[in-house]
Image 1 (spheres, one colour):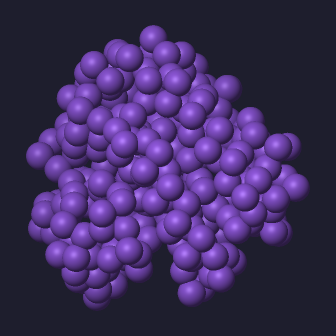
Image 2: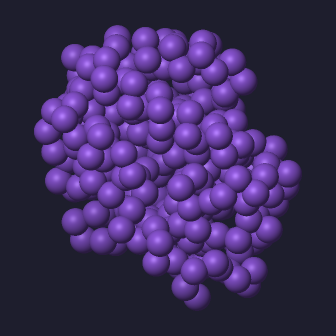
Image 3: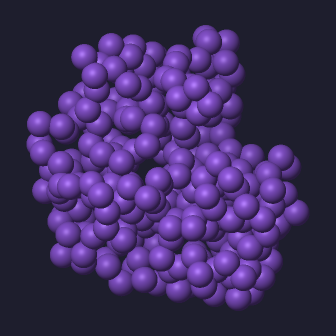
Length: 269
C-alpha cells in the first residue's frame, strides 16, 4: 500500500456525504493518504494517514475522536515526492519504477538517521503510531532480501527509543515471529479483492486463493497474537457489498476503499 504522492495537495476537504457507511466489519479501520476533514473521521480503532497533510491541531482532532492514529512511513523505500527524498537519495540502491521510488540501503547508518529524523518529525505533531509499509522488500523475494536482519534491528531500535510508539506493520507475515514483540498490529491488503494494476481493473479473488490467504492469516495471528486488519478494494457499491459479505465469513475487521486510498471511499452505483 503506497501513497500516490503527486495527488496529495490537489485534494480538497471531502464532504460528509462521501463518508463510508459503517457496519459490523467496517468500523474499526480507516485509511486515507489524501487530506480529509478530521472532524469526519470518528469512532475508529485505528486511523492511518499521511502526516504531512495535517497540523498538530488537526492531528489532535483525530486523536480525540479515535482510539489510535498512525502515520504512514516506509523504512525500505523513499518516493521521489517525499519531503526527505533529496536527503535520502544518496543512500538508496535502485529504483522501483512502478511507484517512482528508490530502495533504501537500510545497512547505511546515515540512511537510518534520516529515517529516525522523519519519525521524530511525525511524533512532534502528536502522532503516537507508525504504519510501516513495504516490509516485503526484505523477504526472500524482495530487492533488499539481504537486509532483513538490519531491518529488524532498526525496528527494535525505534521501539526502544520510542517507548510509547505503537507500530502497525503492513503485511510482512513472514516476520510474524521476529516482530511478535515489536509491532502492535498487522494490516493485510486484498484477501477477497484483487486489483489488476496493468489493466486498472477491480476483481474478486477465486475462492481457493481466498482460503489459502485466510489460512496464512490465521496462522500468523496465532503466532503474533495481535489484531489483524484487512484492506479491500472495490469500485462499485455492488462489489463493496460482495466483499463485505465475504469478509464477515472470515471474521477480520475490513476497510473497503478505492485503490489509490486518496479519499473517503465513495462507490459507483
